[in-house]
Image 1 (tube, rainbow, N blue to C red):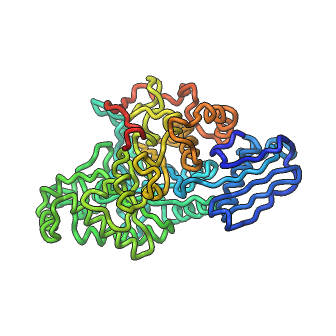
Image 2 (image 1 turned 60 degrees about the vertical axis):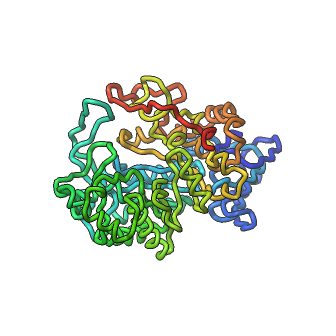
Image 3 (image 1 turned 90 degrees about the vertical axis):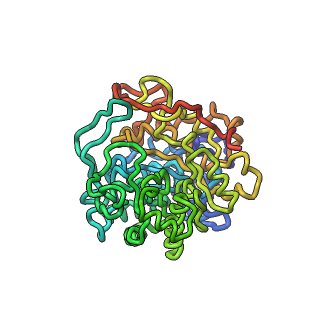
Length: 504
């Protein structure tokens, strides 16, 4: 059938013929919100969805049945497409089927983001997590604080790859989205039943903000006025100060963010917040004593809890990387688990919703093969098969009531060395197609999954669809000559990659 993702049930008559007549659609809430039933015959097609989203996903399957040319922007052959006459009954396993795109490290123009919305929709992925702020750039216009984009959206130079000695691209880099740009992205995504979840990083990964407004930093420890937007990729010690003024600043930022993004969830980062400056700061230590905290981990938790209450009061929910569990997890927060599985397991067992996206499985900036031709090798090797065997519900939760707390799965693509659309395509595809099937379908356990069949379907139809869509994916035979980056140093992890088997 060459369907990606795989359907729940297919009844095929054995006949193949032209798709005659119209495509008729209707909504039947009894099917479930994103479920659909697709029927094709010589008389046309009927799509019944549990909601408009279900109808939309049914249309995507109909496109798949019509062949790769259905993914072109205009028809190239006259007459109706030839399709198998069948009935497909389909529904997703997870409600959160996501892709995180980091536009902070390397800015992608608005049209590239809109294109990725289309690519997600083709694969029945329904969440675009936009990583909008980091040490290396602030990408969202905030009218109350114009220096966030006047200063924070631009860096003087950029490190090339990793390794020693450090080499630099001395060209300035930057860009940002106006609020109207982001409203357009949100509206375009909504038409395709994709939710855009914004990420505003705090209290770490905040040097672009501090460079714009030095009073946000720990001014009693360092001269924050000397900081500039970071051009390197290191984990940065320059973090936000735990003051009331900083809380008010970010409340004002979030007020504008919430006006742009109607998503229920708002991501507030919370990862890799080094505590050295807080330990050295008299202001931070006074705050620890004032609040009766045991240390700096609880100080970070206090900040996260503050914004959890702030978002809850406005009908939203906070989600953050799994470091937000340190020092105590905010009552209403959800966790995005990226470090192995332990943080997600603990959060689920404590009654918190979890999106599984462990770097050891589904970080798409990691290298796809061990060969020397791979551009800027980084991390562990994550092959297409590795991603296809990713299981979002770890064995410890499987079969328990806590398994329902795993609300979805997501692949993440950080862009330290993915400097343009072509490099993003190369890192994302074809592995994002494997993630799409994992997130949609109720597959057997990782060891029992039929990767040979998945690979056959990729070769039989899906690579041709990606070609029709203009995706510069990594070919199964390895990178094309123009996809390589010889001489740019990478950084591979030395310890072995854990898998789902070790997530006990």
